[in-house]
Length: 308
Image 1: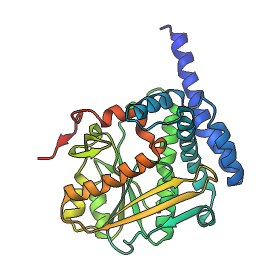
Image 2 (image 1 turned 60 degrees about the vertical axis):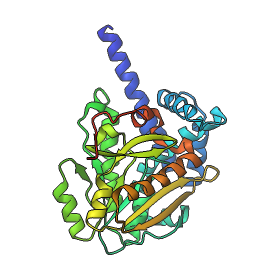
Image 3 (image 1 turned 30 degrees about the horizontal axis):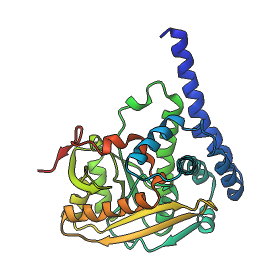
C-alpha cells in the first residue's frame, strides 16, 4: 500500500470515529432528550454507522439463533451504541434532575454504608447507573483493565474518547477509577473505607488472569472468577445491576438484584452469569460485545488461566 493510500485510510477512519463517537451522539445529547432520542432513532437506520462492527455482531448473534428480523436487530444494536456514546455527553451536561426524570428504578442497591461488589455487563447503556449509585449514598469505584494502547494505534479520536469516558465515569461515581493490574492497594483501601467496587464482568478470557468455566448461551465459556472469589473471601455483599433502554421513549430502566453475601465463588459466579444470560436472551441486540464474540466462545481461554 502506498504512503498516500495509508494516509487516506487513516484519516477516513479518524473521520468515521469523529462522526460516530463525538459529532452525532454529542449533538443529540445537547437537545432536549425526547428530541435528541428521536434524532438518534432515525440515525440508527443509517447502515454506514458502525458498519464493520455491526456486520460482525449480526453474524455472531445469528450463529447463536438470537436474530429474528435482521434489519430490526441492526437498528436496535446501532441505537444502543449511539445512546451509550451520547450518555458521555449527557452525563457531563445534565444534573441529577435528568436522572429523576428519565430513569425508572426497580429494586434497591442494598449495600449502603458497607464495602461491596457491584456487578454489571456490557449490555445496553450503563452510565446513569453510576449517577444513581452516587445519588443513593454509595461511594463506588469503577474497576477497569489497564489498556496497553495497542487498540488505539492510529486512532487518535478513539483514544481521546476512551480517556474522556474514563473521566466521565469517575465524575459520575465521585471516586477515582481503579485500574488492574496496578491498583490492588487502591482496591484494598476502598474496601477498607467501606466503599464499593463496580466491575463489568463479561470480558473475554484473554483479558483476565483467572477464569472459571460457565454455561452461557448453551456453551461452556471461561469467565473471570477473581472478583467472585474476593467477594466470598472478604464476605462482601454483591449486587447485580442492569440498565436497559426503552426503545420507544429513550427512558432508562435500572434493575437491581442484591445477592447478599455468598459462601462459594463458583456458585456466586453462576448466579451472576444467569443474569447475564437472561438479559442477552431477552434483548440480544443490546449486548455490545457481539462483534468480538469469538473471543468469548473459544474452546480454551486465550491467555487466561483456568482456576486451579
